[in-house]
Image (cartoon, rainbow, N blue to C red; front, side):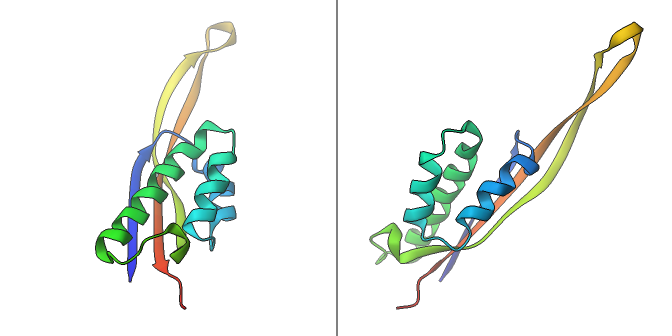
Length: 114
């Protein structure tokens, strides 16, 4: 039983999200959710929402799952999305190019082997 959830076009750079994704890889959903909730960083919100969505998808596929402890994070990927490019004024009348990066998050959860 494998379930997945995808979030696209997240307005946070993937370089800032990947360290959090690396920590929760392999954790149970309960432990990963608790760890992300204790992080006092706003950029973990998309990871929490995607993790809860993946668990809900797993519960929909397999109704006898009654707790988050029975499911673990099998795969988590944070990929680069499109880049919004724009210009801001710089010194001496120049234009400085700016890049706002976006992310795509994929979380795959699976049932623990008993």
